[in-house]
Image (cartoon, rainbow, N blue to C red; front, side):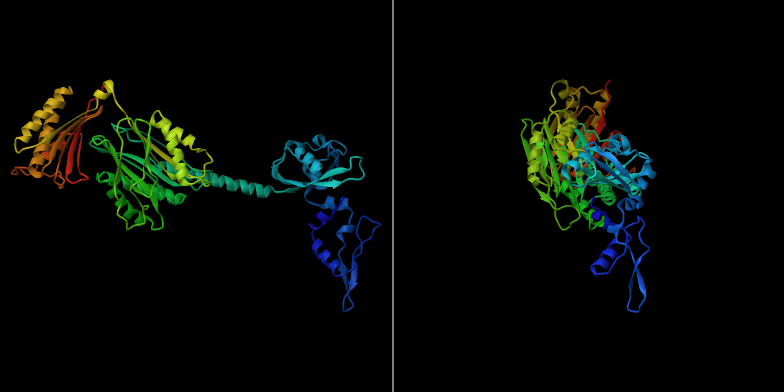
Length: 552
């Protein structure tokens, strides 16, 4: 057996090898298994310096017995045991020589080392397996080296060297457990900042899903939200804070809260992004985020949106054709100095729209456009409820538990309602022309429509009163063109008046002597909700809504 490769690892070997290279003599008694006391060499002063014995002259068995690591030698195709050192006996007890390793060394068979011995014997190449836990709980790294055993008929053997790495293995496991706890904390924070339940608009069906990326603790800052604005309109938002970890999740939470606050102002999408851009710079000038903010108005049949560096919205129409809404797109939030703009895409009955983050389509080995094209193909064939579409898109894009990035997907559908379900969703509108005669015409129109919709008398009267007050307010404070719109859904009645004046009404306390100022106060008293907004093309809309009684 060649012991050279092991001798270089023993203490003092390098020093003695250097001494031999310098021509220094060594001394070692060959008759005894115990080395001579020491050889000495004279110095310039005439004194003697003791020399350590050469390792190559030490009996091999004595060296192996003194090694603190576990050593065993097996030979032949059955790996019969030839030798174990004292450390091995201390760890596992006395082992019978001559027996096959599967019976003589059961601890090695239990950790699956037998196939490795076969491989080393066949290939004559050393192999190593790291950190295997053996019976008793300790962990070892096993190195199996082929050796020549000339004293046996089989000739070939394997030297098994096991280094105790229990401390390292336990430290690694503690580190992994700590990382798991950190990841659980980060994911819990991330999920707590996302909506616990999506709001349910009257005219849309929505679903969303979130998948944290990979197995590391650094989760991302993906978020989504659905916000009912009143008057039948719905805001939808999805975003992604660049970077990973607790900081990204915290910034995401602040932006999501700000979006909900700005949405209550019922501003156009590009103005909401303009406000978010300034806020993102205040939160952290080094942290940027992408975002899409969109508003759906069932009266218009379109999705009006603004994008801050985010991926394009995908819309599949009733015929199955997928459209990509990729213009206009501004820079990410937090960059500043950019005027965002709003765009629109049709979203009529029977359409499905998908908002998503880059983790769904971005891959290291493919272009981003290829990923978006793959998602378009998946959306073209994904039918069913919004939740079913969500799940199918995630599966078709290959997102698994080991995915290396966070994924957020928001799916919305504008159902095509027919039959009895369609009777629950109605629209009626009247252009308000002329002067003071417009008010009685509006009351008559509202009364006739609400009667045809078979509302109960009390709700009928409240709707006519609301229409009358809103029209009167518009006639007094607004400018043409003016329009009255009535809309019913399966949950509410909506009364809306638009005019060409940009001034938004506000509720105020009217004094007893005042001749005006009570219209909005009356609306706020009788309606479930009311509000106003500026129209994108100029002018304003003032609306109120009444909750319909639930049918059993």
